[in-house]
Length: 203
Image (cartoon, rainbow, N blue to C red; front, top):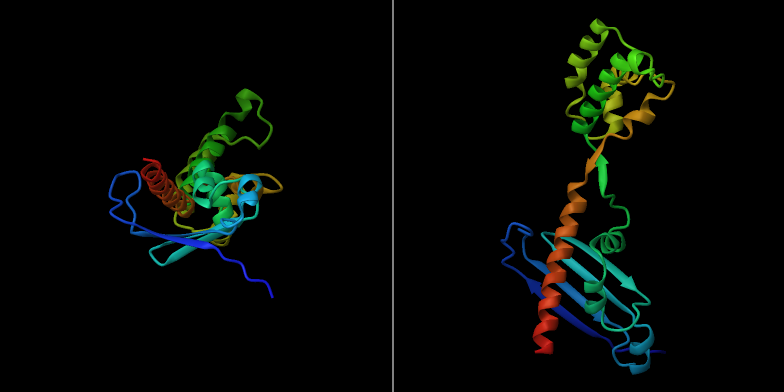
């Protein structure tokens, strides 16, 4: 049987009302797994973190942080790296119906002007067909996913992106993922609080 001791620190971060964060209270659990091993602290420390906010939680474990505590490691890392560790399945961008409408309109105009600029990626449109398709782009609004947009308006998407693989072009209609941005705001708030704690400890 092997028993290991570790130190767990709990922080409650509240009153995050500034314009950058504007969050509900955030609870952070920090656990340093090598804190009783001085040699390990110098070479490669292990630690984990659990972050909770408004009923959601994210966690990550690091088996080699390059020395120091998990709080120090967390503050050294970029928000993008930490978001990838805390929520590996969360992408920074996702499908956007607004982006699809913008892309569709841009493509229609490009197809209208293609005959002048020798753009052969798509077949060119005459003035009437260009206007008709452009007016119909509003029908692409409202879908939550590209699959839903295709189910609702597959024929229209096929006419706008007039290639053998219209879905390939429509797939680039993405925008910032609010869930990813939310997590990055939480990460920034936690880093700010941890830096404040470290400054107080050093004073």
